[in-house]
Image (cartoon, rainbow, N blue to C red):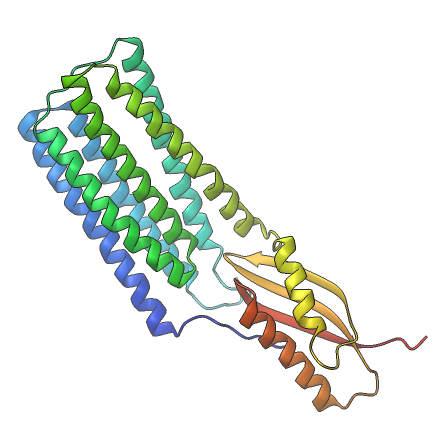
Length: 299
């Protein structure tokens, strides 16, 4: 039985996480400060609501930091498979908060639509929406890049939340201008489009992270790929059992492999090592591979 990890060196991984934290928290804190000032100057209820929305982003950003910190703790007696399931748990919280934001956007838009819409004065509110959209575009691409490097579902969920904020801010900006210059109904109509997009983004995030938390299996394509890789190792006669399970965002693979019963121990050990290293090298998300060698039944 052998365990091999293909994570980046700890220092590099830590640096990526720290950079992601700095961008997320700094960006959201700046937006809270700007929106709070504009809300105070204009006494706008919409701006106060936007301030509260950005404040909630700061809170979940801190929650993300805590969750990722816990997820990186090494295995111990209480969590022998490690703490990586904490990360998709944080991702679920982020996805649920996105879902609540989508619900609130839909509810508010429907109320405005029924009432005939409201003409919104452009000015500071529209400038704040432009600033928010610009900031969130930068945060989205930065977090998406870090999530791809770290394979982090929490950073991926945060990137998607930033993208939702980009669309929300852009739609709010266009809605403000449209309601003033064209028709008041354009504001709630834009809100409904944003709400629909948010719900479309939330569903796959929820399904993905539920799979990580509940110990879901790899895809059929990955399972077949693992079988093919193991079967091609010289000395392997048959793979007669294969189990895959997500422990957090990473896969654990266990397989029973038949080899010749008269193989020297050194050759059997080489076969096991080669299977482990080949699977980890060629199948995405695999963290550990356990290989149980069995003698082929001659009868």
